[in-house]
Image (cartoon, rainbow, N blue to C red; front, side, top):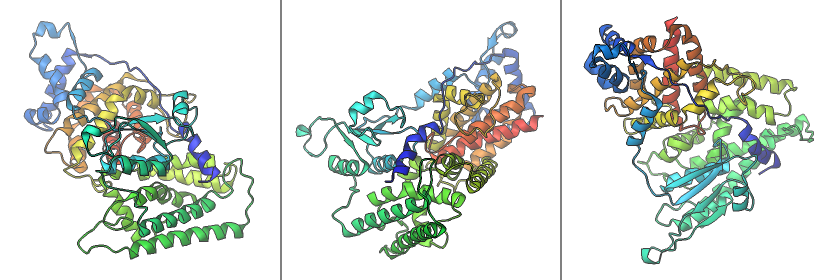
Length: 522
């Protein structure tokens, strides 16, 4: 790839980071716990039995306290509503007992944006190989990584054992490091022969597709990043830029035409690059095309899907493919929200009117997208009854295990904020901790509710049932600040860095609905 693109990889860690924070857990009086449960039921939102089934975490404390001696209630402080982070963590640990022995360690960038890392990340999932991850900051790489990988670049993998030999008695127990994404792809095929083969380099169609993608990538970078970057001294005329643009558009058209010529079975809706099966060329193509799909309309007013039905169909196939959709894919909001940062680094200078306009346009559209977070879309990333429970649990897990960093990030002052400075942070407030534990409790409960199978159902349940609980649990005078914190966290959630795109739909949605309800308190 070009020098500009490699420079792009090295500044990614500066874009979005969070730090640890130890929250202050508020204590709610016992009498308040009893009152909370009574008022919610008396106001008739739903019955006591149904409420206990829907949100057992929120009611367990009040129910237990209500049965205690009255003299005790007047002198002893009960745990807050909802449960503490320790209680939530204990519940999470009981649920998380499905572990597999990892056969590979993947070393990738911290933000999940390196396209070469994404290839390997996706292939590991496509092959079903259990793996661990080690996140490597692209700047100030640790000494241990420099000693491990001669190039010091990501991605790299550590293969824990050699699976070439089918005879378990002769299987070698060796560990080896492999770097460079194409070499890693081949190594995974060789080391795990029982998994689907991905690099079909003995297939003429595969090799032709790789060469076509190389031409497209080269044409794209020559046009998109032409004269970009503060240290780029290249001067291009309008005619040069137009020629590069036309070469790029021709390369995209060539891909669309080629996709349309692939022979496919009549009864097979799959639309991958070579036919009905996902292969290594799909993993090579998606990281760059995904970025162009969302960011070129903002930076170059180019929609790569416009009048290209076959390319659109290929994207639909990728978004329906579980190994990609359920963890590796980014989403429209994440690529839009981060685009202004990319423009500042690679746009050629913020003093240029066209760069300023693109940044303003990007920020405006990103803000518009946040307004739709409450409307969770089942179709956005293929949410279904078969996947919703796991996705909701993923969102709960991310919140519970990272709550300290989340709390600090949403209340950081201007001097501490490293990215997305346009997003207003909240003031430090113990009520924010209550709201986050409340959100975590909701997510934990809903993940185990057999009747909640879609994002739409989750949205309906939360919207209809949480208002009174929030009014009781959070001080009215602080509701505006807590609402701001919820919206900040939702806007700061980036895929695939923080969680999968489907989990982000649920996570942002829950926080935004809570914020909507808090705004209605005043």
